[in-house]
Amino acid sequence: MNFWNDPLKIVADWLTGIFTGWGMPAVIAGVLVAFIGTLLLITVLMVLDIFLVWLERKVVARFQDRLGPNRVGLFGLIQPFADIVKLLIKEDTTPEGADRVVYNLAPILSMMSVLILWAIVPLAPVMLGVDLNVGLLYIIAAGAIGTLSIIMAGWSSNNKFATIGAFRQVAVMVSFEIPMVAMLLIPTIFAKSMGMNGIVQAQNTWYVILSPLGALIFLIAAIAELGRAPFDMAEGESELVSGYNIEYSGMKFGMFYAGELLHALTFGGFWAILFFGGYRFFGLEKVSPFLAVIILLAKALVGYWAIMWVKYTMMRIRIDHMLAFNWKFLTPLSFVLLMVTALLNALLAGTPGWVYVIGMFLSNVLVAWIALEIVRSVGRKERVKAEAPKPALSEVERVAAEVHH
Amino acid sequence: MNEWLYVGLFFIVGLIIPVGAIGVAWILGPKKSNPIKLTTYECGIETVGDSWVQFKAQYYIFALVFLVFDVETVFLFPWAVRLGQQGLFAVLEGIVFVAILIAGLVYTWRKGMLEWA
Image (cartoon, rainbow over all chains, first blue to last red; front, side):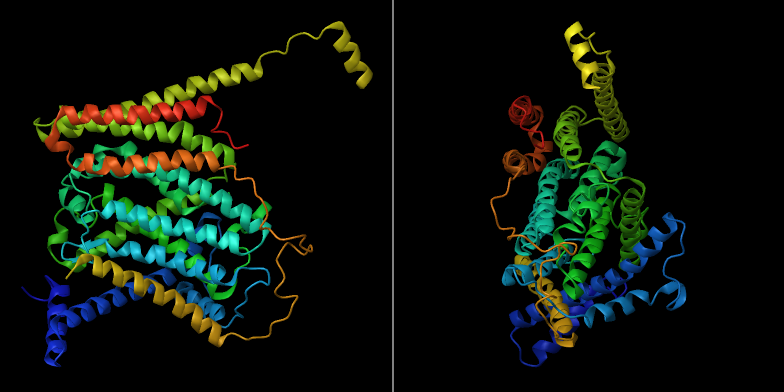
């Protein structure tokens, strides 16, 4: 075993050796090494986050036929650092009417809720924080802290825009959590495991092939969970100015902003892990753990790019349409899909692998087709009803209408 | 080492980093506060009253339905993990379980509670 095959263990053993050599008890040395590892991972994430600001600005510029940041440094790469310096030397304000404790705690929790998600992300077969056997439940629980931070920010600002924005955002987040959680169950059924590493290890066939509809529903629900366009009613610039974070400025706003970008990348990563094989790519992950990390990051960035693509292409949806879409379409559909998957999983057990894959794929296509046909026929009925000629007016009504004119 | 201890460490470091960033900004930033700067932002219009008033929570029913489904999914996770070993019977039980909850959703829908009003 050399450094390139299992770097974390080598470095951890080396550090533990040094610390115990200083006369430190083994338990404390272990905790200290884990602490250093955590600090390192989170620092890398924060640096990555800084580049995400640049990436987001560059990509949105391209979508809008602009150049984006291109003055400071090569391709404007230094721009986000200049932005951070600006954020750091801005005045730290708390509005007069705000609840000080809750107001200042909200951006911290917002950032934390994203960072703690990375505790369970398997970066490579041997590079992972911790392989919790209830990994998927941990994702849901950590996501709840994000929801909490938004309602905290909106309520404590004592601003009407912020309150309304937070109310909308929380309504959307709790609603779309249902299809998302249902879609988390599909990889669980395939992999027979709730742990992230178990799901990646079991993915000899990418789950997007077994369940394309599941991957799509997960992406839609994840975008809503992130509060990004087209599900960004909470921010609605034209009516709520900025929504829940309206009163925040300087680094506190920076925490919300950076948290949102990192959250989007994280969900791109989860999409990759659950449906696109995580760090696995035709056996390349076995060559070196570093290569596996690069594969996962590339897949996460593709997912992040898909989320950005949707954001900068779609228009904002009205809140009642958004919730109706979730409760009347996505939730029933996701549970039907879950049940079909469970049923086929039992019926196709024992058949050759290719029959299983084709059966699952076709069942997904069939469920999607039936769902779209139902929506189409309901929509047609509604349209016929709306376009039906109005019943002829009676003589009295006609006269009344003329008088009115 | 206990894996939950590691998660706990993540919580601590995850708190330290944003607190540190905001703290550094607090130290470096100017402190020239005045009453106008700290007023509530409402596009230049003076604020009337505060916003901690009775507020119509349109999503109250959504939150209740959400609660039912969220608890349900917690029950479904162990079911999904063990599905492979349990055979068809467990699948049918799962379908009955979900069908009961979907019936609840349909009831809410028919009662007109899934409208944002």
